[in-house]
Image 1 (cartoon, rainbow over the protein chains, first blue to last red):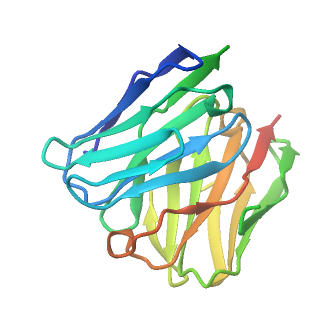
Image 2 (image 1 turned 45 degrees about the horizontal axis):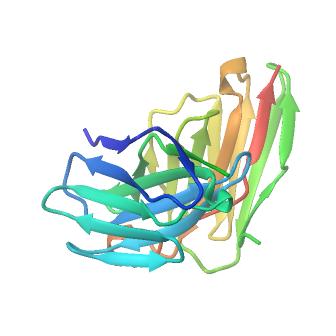
Length: 110
Length: 117
């Protein structure tokens, strides 16, 4: 059975600091997704990582994928308050079956 | 603005009621999904329709009944729900029935927040 594990589950950081969120998954998958969710809102796609060694950056967020280690990271650079949200990683199995990690609830404090 | 539209945004229903959630997309996507999300939890897959046919049913209780009238519409019919079914119900779509062959994420609607009393 596929397991998608994120850590940390809760992250409180100060503005201007850097931090990394980790996502491990237990079975082979050729797609790794990162989503953001604000409280009471839907999921917003951040990144789709397609292959081993893939790295994508958007603003203060950078995501990477190591398919051999079954590990993806989401790195936050110089955090700002607007980044406060819950971040989910997800992987696909069996074509259109997407499974999510538990989520990392990020709070950025002044 | 999301391109996947869900109605209603909020729904309160009693355990004996029958109601339906609706989802619509006009992106030409051929796969549509229902996810259930409890508070502070990740979304959990319920159903997947590919080309208007049910392809995945994650052992969802029969009090939830999905329907895909056409490739743009997805309904979730609710009957005799329990208070523990209260959650955010998210609809999503994707261009094909194979996420592994398409470089696109799922497109989520804004969800219906359901409360069962």
